[in-house]
Image (cartoon, rainbow, N blue to C red; front, side):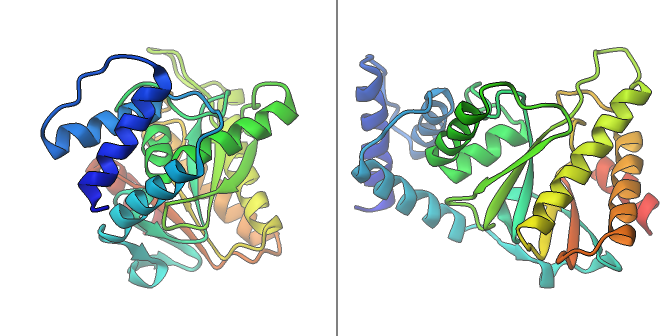
Amino acid sequence: MDMEEQLNFLINYLIDERNESIEIPQSYHDKRNLLRSLMNIRMPSKVSDEFLKVQDDFLTNETLNKNLTSVEDITESKGKIMLWQGDITTLKVDAIVNAANSKLLGCFIPLHNCIDNVIHSAAGIQLREECNSIMKIQDKDEGIGKAKITGAYNLPSKYVIHTVGPAIPQGLNPSRDDCMALANCYTSCLEIAALNELESLAFCSISTGVFNFPQELAAKIAIKTVNDYLDSNETTLNHVIFDVFSDESYSIYKKLLF
């Protein structure tokens, strides 16, 4: 199958699975968005081996056609800390950090632009299934400041580390407890990375999106927490990357780091 044939197969499989009548658009772009939407809303459940093989071939091919970045390609650094601007799903590192929600199952809103949705969409439906297995064993919501590690499936990284940051109500400032909780997110991810003997870890800007944590304060907490951890602990980590997406975030981190 070529990629469009794979796309058609995946869409039809997920529509049949839902037992619904959904009109399939004509253009490749619109069909690709439909596939992502169907993946986004799909509850974790068993799927056929054929579906997984086609999905993995399709998503891996998409990943390999992206402009992937490894630690050797990142030029802005200070000691073990690095700064990079771009799509975290294109980083070829040991692990990337996902800003998750307390259910730890990814974002169910079709085509939502949060990092949780982007990571799950690029990884494939196995990521939600693995997260669901973790949560079934845990039998309660994931705590703020905690972290879990999973495979990365069709991402270029080896693992994804999921952490739940504090959510700040619109119009309010973070409390002292919120700041401590955000710091705990970074520490938990660093501890899991060390436990799994990882050498490179890329952080997204935890809690600064829909969770409303102010960007500059979040960056200060992130940098201090990482620096303190690296100074005080034996770790296999050689590269800790702060991955930012917007120009504003890049300017904030560059000012604070360099």
